[in-house]
Length: 140
Image (cartoon, helix red, strand yellow):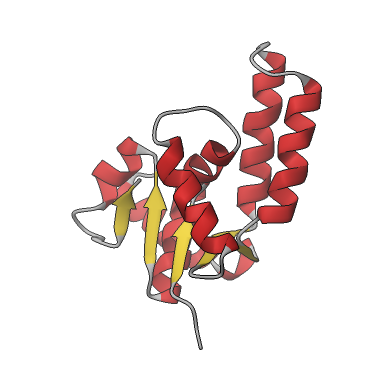
């Protein structure tokens, strides 16, 4: 049996580790994934983006190095199914040029379009810019 797929971006995944608004909803997605009720998917870029947020928190004095490293280890254990960015870049570039949005964000959308599934984001600006054209872009 194939599980339903959902693309999640880094704005959702960081909430698994950081106390931010809508964390409970992000954790619900993680639990559904851990219980094998859904498949979460993301471009491999997700790892760099989340690791960058964690290290930035340390630099700003908002987290300890130990906390950031623990969160990173948990990320590696609980990461969504990761897809090679190179497979998505042509579509992401077309989406970015056509929408004025960042290529990074459009990688997630390209993956969702390719897989025929929803993209869940906590990025209000990206959601607002893309949801009218792409109803599969959902806000957490």
